[in-house]
Length: 216
Image (cartoon, rainbow, N blue to C red; front, top):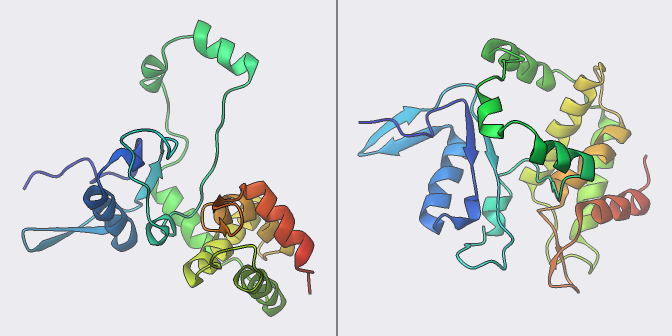
């Protein structure tokens, strides 16, 4: 057995939607189970295990759209867009980015990251906060704006992301504002607009949910 590139702590799946559905399914299974099974033997992946994936616009030739159930496995989707004029000029005039990669120094150790991840789970979420989270989820399941609502996995993702947001702010308890802050990234790739035959911009979804669902 020769371990492939998936046996790493940080995996970049570049242009993930150009992979075939079979390859996509294998990657997403590894993300969910933190293990790889081949030739009847299951091998655990390193810990921590973190996946960053990029994708091309779905209208481009040679892309295979990810089904909704697979998109739901990703905690967040962040749109980068084009760089600003100053950043693009620095890119054009600066050192090759491939050269700079070799000069990057680690900013955190695996043990420190594991400790921080464990700290996220210790951030308290009150009953009132859970009520607010459930109200947000319920709203996506009832109005005609969306073809389908948020799944239970999406609810867990919102809660964990809000806990991490609170921890980064040095707090031990989740506030409604933490949920509101992570909604664009966590929800944007999970909801379909019923009347537009596509997904709504994450920022628009956040504004709609925050305005429609009052804080308890």
